[in-house]
Length: 76
Image (cartoon, rainbow, N blue to C red; front, side, top):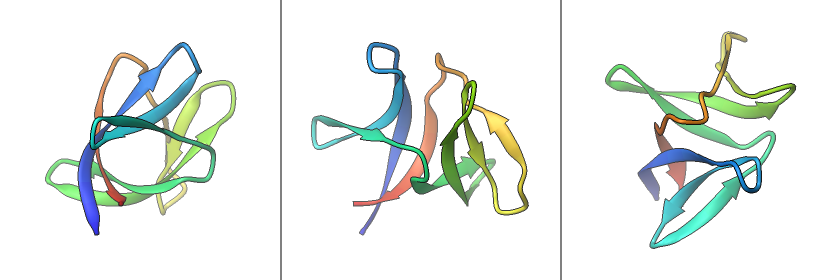
């Protein structure tokens, strides 16, 4: 079942994660999820270089901003 959640950053562990049923789950390199762009969820992959970023199917990459929450769709 897919769940629409918010991807948020936790600076204490330097990781991104989602809150599901009151619990925060860390996301690691290579995790795949749908990132909401406009009104559509686009499949992407979370990666870490100097900064955390997502890579879209067409190899477009962009850095995630730690103070922003991203709407994502994950398999739960």
